[in-house]
Length: 235
Image (cartoon, rainbow, N blue to C red):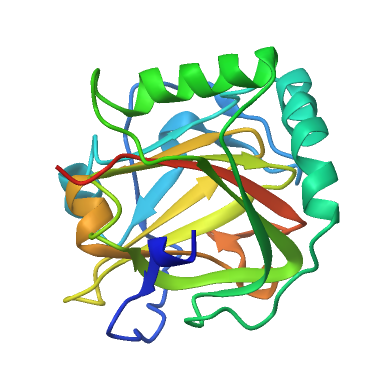
C-alpha cells in the first residue's frame, strides 16, 4: 500500500482556523455521538474558511455519523487486531507522509464485516465503479498523525472513503495551489468520511496530531485511531 500515498509537492504553512469559520448547512440536525463528549449536529461537521467554499464542495466532502454500530466496530477490531498486534508502530514513513503508524491490507472479511464493507461501497461509490484491490487499514498511535498529502493519482481514482474506529479526530483539507482555502472535518468515532473529485484531487488531506486536534474552537482529544479505507481505481 506504500505506493498509494504521495506527499503533496508543496508543504503548506498550517492555515489559521478562525473561531468564526463557516459551517456546512446540511438539512440534518441529529447529533454526532462522540467518545470525547463533544456535541455537534450533523450540519456542523464540516467547517471552512468561507461559507462559499463549504457550499462549493458540498457533495464532494461528506461525513456520516454512526455509520457503523458499536457491535460492528467490535467485529472489525476482532478481525483486525490480531494482525496489527504483530506489527510495531513506525515513526519514519518512507515518504514522510505518516508518523506513528502501522498498516495492513484486508481482502477477505467475516460475514458481519463484509456486510459493513458492502454498505460502505454502496454509499460511497457509483454502481460498477472498479475498486482498488484489498482494503487499506491504517492504525495511528495516539502520538501519530498523517501529514498533508494527496493520494497517488496513478493508483487511486476519484473517491476515497474511510471508516474511523476507536477515536474522534479532525481531518484538514487545504487547497494545494491556494493554501488560504481550507476545510476542517470533524470525524466522530464510527463515522464514515468520503472525499470526491475536486476535494480529492485539488486538496491535501491530513489527520491532525493530538496537540493540534481542535475543531470549531473545541478540543478534540485524539486517541489510537484505526481507519479502514476504500478507494476506486482511476478511469
